[in-house]
Amino acid sequence: MSESGKPKTYDLEDRTFEFAKRVRFFARKLIKDIPNIEDAKQVVRSSGSVGANYIEANEALSKKDFLMRVKICRKEAKESRYWLRLVDTGSDAWREGERIDLEREAKELTAIFGAIVTKSQ
Image (cartoon, rainbow, N blue to C red; front, side, top):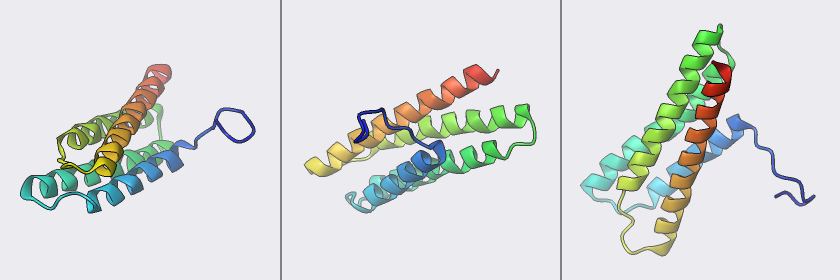
């Protein structure tokens, strides 16, 4: 809720941008072992791809192109969630809390893009 008591409205471009930025900050704080390095690379790529493809969708030349881009957004959000589930946060409470929060955001973004696909078809 916003300070005025009304639900917050999000610009989806801003929301996907913030998601990608938070993932990058989180990745910098992870334990530096081989699995985490590889998983962090993947989640950084997929999280950035969510927003980049949403920008492309907004510039689509046709409805078919729009739907394809939004479906890619949904796919990349799902993939981000997968990689977030794989990273090892060790025993650090902040890292685990942030991982859970980012995973939830990826799930919400997946649902949002799924709803856009359904309504646009």
